[in-house]
Image 1 (cartoon, one colour):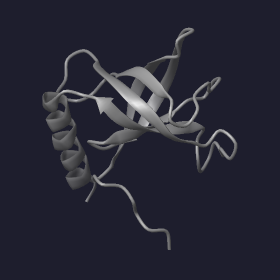
Image 2 (image 1 turned 60 degrees about the vertical axis):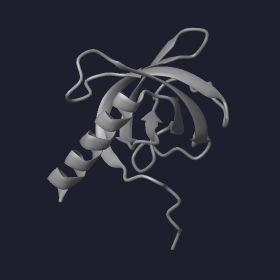
Image 3 (image 1 turned 135 degrees about the horizontal axis):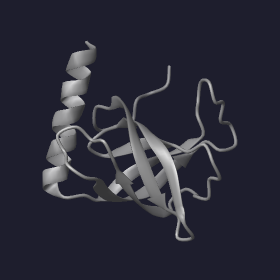
Image 4 (image 1 turned 90 degrees about the horizontal axis):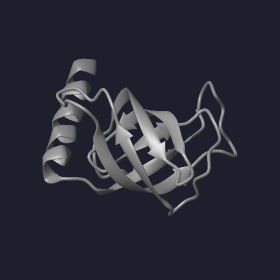
Length: 118
C-alpha cells in the first residue's frame, strides 16, 4: 500500500480555474483541494513542467465573492499516463502565495466538504 505523504486533508471539488500560461489563458477544474495545494484538471494543451510556477485563479469557491488568486508550484503532472476516466490529465500544485485569510477559508471549506461527505 502506498504511504500517504500529504500534510493536509483534501476535499473533492469541481471549481473552475483559469491559469495564466504566460502566453495566454487556460481553463481547467480544481478536482480536489487542501490548504497546501490542489489537483487541476486541464483538457487542452498542457504546457507546465514539474517545479515550474503558475499563476491561477479559482472561481465559484463557496463563501467567497469573486475569484481566489493563487501562485503555485507544479509538483506533479500526469500528461504521459492520463486516463480520462480514472486519472484526468492535469497537475498537482502546491500553493506558494496565499493569504492567511484565504488559507483559513480553504481550511474551513475542506473540513465542511469532508464532513458533508461522511
